[in-house]
Length: 329
Image 1 (cartoon, helix red, strand yellow):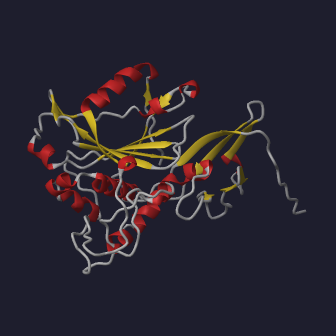
Image 2: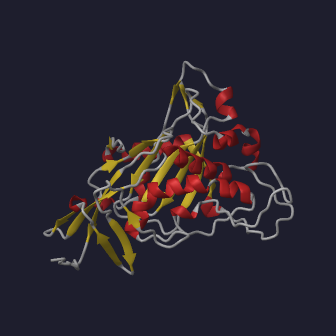
Image 3: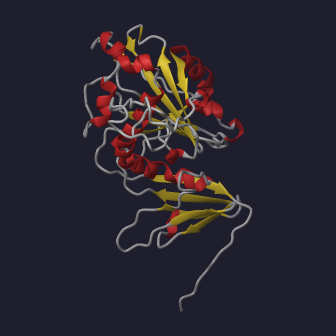
């Protein structure tokens, strides 16, 4: 399985910027999250299961932005240990999805910089990438085509063959972040959003948008991961309907755009005769324009419950190559 890659027109950048911010306002941002983590479980309640202490425990330190995207201090006081632990599986699946970018750029997660290990067939040796200081150490196993050098340009083209992961788990991790960022009055108005976290299979209601949009920066890297929740200024414009909430996730050199399930306001204004309008965030404006030869937004369908694999191709530039050649003869 591979991501589809529709090209965008760089000359249209001004119109993209105008249209997105004409339709959406910032509702909440992890950058502005000023909540001080409280160690005491007294008076704590969980926004995901509705239970309170002492019915459930609050000994763990849950992160609003999971540290699988990179280390951060964005903690939550409103997630119990049971709900936090229940999401371990989905976070592990999502970590597999994002790992190539963290490994390549040396981004530290909760357990340090992850060592990338590619998938392999039974008769193959896996390729690995680990970071030591400022050096990237590649072990290409038996898959020699995973790495291609261009000595003239001093570049190396690397194919990261991800291990299998479940896109529906990625959906749940992003939805959980969106719910966590959502203002309390909006969560109270949309309790059904919590149900989407609990189901084992996607709910296809002909109005849910399942596509994840991804833009990979060419010349920028985010120091720490962050998440922003945008709200539609109007859910109906002319003869088109807009998802009320959109989540933007930034980490490593990647931005993800994810639309939350329809809200009560969406449902109240829904007309089957109208079309759904999906407005793509102009993430490329954050990039280094001098290094942009083309603008590509990649997509992944998140309603897949079976495991998929991706081939992530990256190009890195180097000052020198150190080789370690072993002769077994």
